[in-house]
Structure formats: structure tokens, C-alpha cells
Length: 258
View 1 (cartoon, one colour):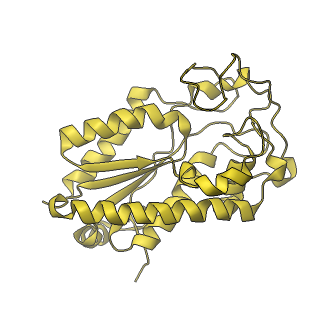
View 2 (tube, rainbow, N blue to C red):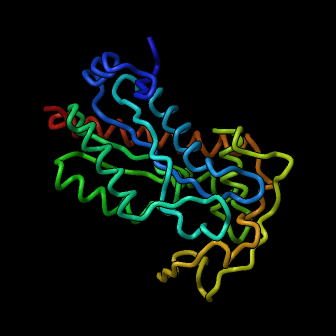
């Protein structure tokens, strides 16, 4: 007996039986973009998938884990060779079609685990649209942000959030194969292009690209990253996500199945 329903590891008969028990589908979303000199293009997707597997194990047999959407909205990284981006409408269409497909198989509750900040605006729009058009209960999370207590001490640099000490720590714990340990370096940052940006919630949004703020594609100081810090971040985020989803599924259970 498996301890998680992972759709990509099933036959259709396995899926039929799992879907008869599962109340909610978890969908990981990521990107295929540069992560400095020391991490591969797979980082965001690999972190989201590994976290989602842990979550599926914690909530078995109430959830089923869908395959990841491994490309995201990454226009801001395209100056770095090898990065691949989707248009917002392409990414949104992929999310919509995955949810629609699983809705056809009877699932009416969904939770998206997002590993890439560039997907945020698309997911905000799609969550509303999917709820209205498909009559599903849906939520999504940038799971790193849930580790608010742990992040207070791991984020030491002025500019963090990409290939930094926090994200590299997570990768060392969740997906060590994406980290080139001998090539870990500090971010070659140049600062934000305008005053007030990057200083908390300034209330101003500017669509800058990563080559404008870092020469090597990284922020922060990944030389401070450790697997132990990554584990602490993940464990705090995981505990909060389990608490939320248990409540989410319990309160939506009455309308979760056809």
C-alpha cells in the first residue's frame, strides 16, 4: 500500500481507485529558468514537486498528486541563456486544462503548490476563473512564504528571493540534485533600478528584468545556505499547509464530489 497517491506512477485502474478516495488534487507549478551559476533550470519545479510529495504523504489518502506544470512565466530571466518562458495565457491555459481534466474525473477541490514567483499574477486570475467557471474549491500557495518564522533568521542579505541563501537551502534539502555545490556563489547584485523598490511593501510595482539587478542571475548569499536551514523552512511551511488543507477539505467536503 503506497503512502501517497501520485498520479504519474499509476495506471488508469490505480487512478480510478485513488480518485474514489481522494477529495482534493495537488498541482505543483514551477518554471524552467536560470538560477545563478550554482543551480539548474529545474529548481522551482523540483522544489514544488518534492514539497507536494511530502504533503501528499501527510494527507494520504485524502489527496492525489497531479504531474507538475514544469514551465512558468519567466520573461524576466530571458537574458540568461537557456531560460524558457510561457506567455501568461499559455500558462493559464495549462492550469485550466489540468483542473478541467481532473474535474471530469470527479475532483472538485484543488490546491496549487507554486514554486515560482513569476506565476503569481496568473494564478491569482485563474483561481477566480476556475472557481466561477468550473464550480471548484481552489486555493494556491507560494509555500516558502508560509515559513515566516524561519525566514526571519535565514534571510540575511538585503536582496533575496532567487538563488539566494533561502532558496538554495531549500534546494539542498528538497532536491539536492539541482545544486552545483562547488559553484555556489554570492549574488552579483547591482541593486534595484529605482528608489523604494525592494524595501518591503512600497506599494509600487515595476516589471524589471533580472539582468538589471544581478550580473550572475543570483540574489543574496548562497554561500550561507545549508540543508539544515532548508529543512527548517520546509517543516514550518509543511505543518502550516497541512493545517490549512485539513480545514479546507473538511469545510468543503459536502460539495466536493458529484
